[in-house]
Length: 486
Image (cartoon, rainbow, N blue to C red; front, side):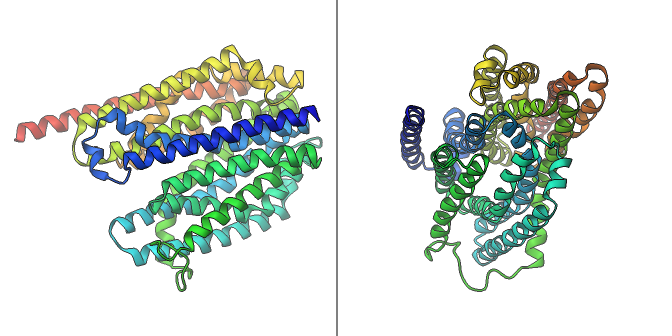
């Protein structure tokens, strides 16, 4: 009982912090007036970046905590093999996310454009098509995955020991897959239709509910790893109900209405065209995790996969901070690039790189100096902790340069150079990481799998630096020509 009381005192403290932070953010966003587009070209860059990045950082960090909390409770409540099973499920979740982004990202961008052009009728039909597509894809993905669940999990790296845990966890998540697709899809539409605050609150509430339900289902009800999956699905159901309530308001431009749900080939084609880039990136991520899991299983067994699960969760938290910074930078860089204010473009890029680098240096410090403390958050298994410490110290060794690479890739996307952005996003995963995963283990055995990640980070950052330098030389030449013409 003392342990349970301690867990719930921590949960209560975290919940109070979440509510307090949410209230502060809501007031902050109301005061700063995020809807005024003209301030993107006039307001001081430092204040502007903070204004736009803070809500995104909170939402992205909450999203990363969502999965981390599951792993912590599963590690202490079920065991080390259960953590390995969760790591085996990573590529499965990435695959589901890939299909979600195919619809969600494409639809959100399309809705934003239509609302900007005041084409409200088409925006409503895009919303209706998103709803229908999410149902179809969610149902089809669930049925196919459940029919072939065990063979897929074996392919993703499961063993005889981890399969029962992975099967229990994924089967419940798959039964709730339709809810997951709808929840993420509706959140994207909320952001696109001028409700970033509500989208952020939905994300934070899902994390809080999941954090509260996890110990109840895992420890109190003794549901084990199935309890963690049930907490995840139930948290998404509650948040989805709140989202649906918003879209039932007929005063909203986008709301549930008759005649908008019939699939339109032209709309679907445009949604898929925009969403194809993040879909392919998530698909590549799924492929890479499969290679990592299989390599770790070959050289280190199930616990090596579990160690990767722990290292990946910790790395993901810092990456989400940088992604939040990127989302804040994107509208500022895009607006000022369009208005040819290249000095402001350079300023916001440099500032974002400084912040991202500082964040990743903190991650580097955690991974190199206190990896044991970080690992013990997830498990008390000494062998798993030992493998996690070794993997973390190798993986985090080039962390200070990763922030630069991530910001640079997002920068090209922000100024409309999608081809360069996709290339930079895929350099790490396919051009460098995949060959490293095949070649380095030949010489370094199991350590080669771990070293593949920082080596690919370093090479991808070098490529990003070269491309960014050439781009800014092009900017300077273009600016010089314009001044000469005047």
